[in-house]
Length: 222
Image (cartoon, rainbow, N blue to C red):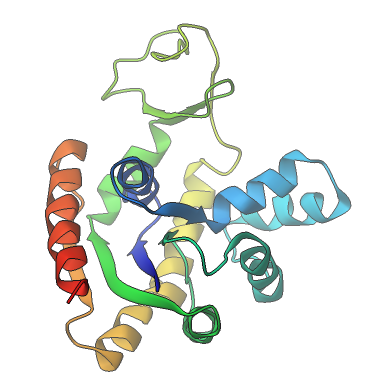
């Protein structure tokens, strides 16, 4: 049976970074609805233009669209990390039924705990390489002149929705519509939720999740 993990947390809490690192170490594929939506935007379709307007406003994209994206990109032959999805109780209920239909077992829900003011600063310091698509923090990685540490070219860009107004809107939406999902999962299974201190350094967070996941996967064998 295929397996799934869910990473929940405020925008900028490090979910995407950890999902990318973990899929390199474990047999899991990262599913970021945000990345899937931005891919649609980059294609410049009429649908992509509508999505761009919603993303830049900090609001949640229509559930029907997100569900269609998942149906196309998820199958019963792989293990998945759902990065930042579900984002509402409605999406949580959809995902529960969707995983059952695909015979995919939800192992754990990791919640990335972080101070909101720190999140805002972290996002405002974030840049993404137009070439290798990797994310960098201009303070942490000591970026100068938008030179990508990986490509060694001036290819770092700010995401269109990484501005303080949009960030605060996204966090407000998160607090109102996403945070209650924690109670949804705790009521389903009090042991399914694992809290992660996302204020720690990236390597410390990675080691913490890796240790937990190794134990979880070992226990799931029996």
